Image 1 (cartoon, one colour):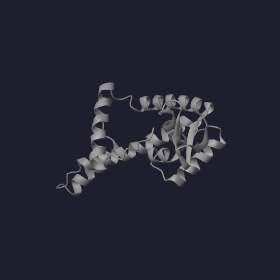
Image 2: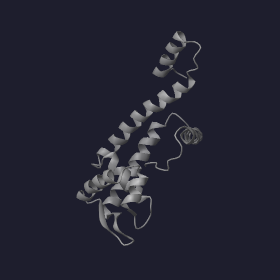
Image 3: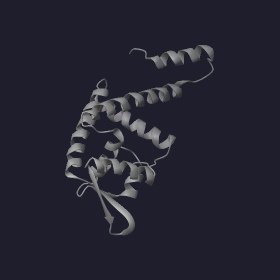
Image 4: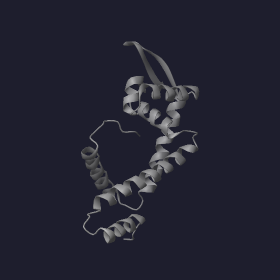
Length: 170
């Protein structure tokens, strides 16, 4: 296996401070670097659909609910790890594009239900395939079995490092 730039960083630290165990830093730097790459790839994949990643996140949360592809705005904000104000801003933009619509929540006079429109459903159904294609391409260097193993390890790290916030996008 070839070295990557992180190996060079860790080697330099080992030369300067041989008493340090830099293995965990190697994992964290690689994950942070991959995040930047994956974010850029996801953004590029959605360009053809004229969709921003934040718009994808909201549409994806609604689509995953199944029919009628609706959620109260407050739950949608929680699932997207956003404040209610930030969610309102995002829903405004999606509504202006005709991808979602709002209606009053019958169970909460102050609440709003956000629902995918047909256009929004069609866009998110294309977008998820674009995202999956890009993700598959990004992980082309590892087998399906290795992907499952890596996912399990990353899940374990996430649960122990930051706690399970129950707000994962995509």
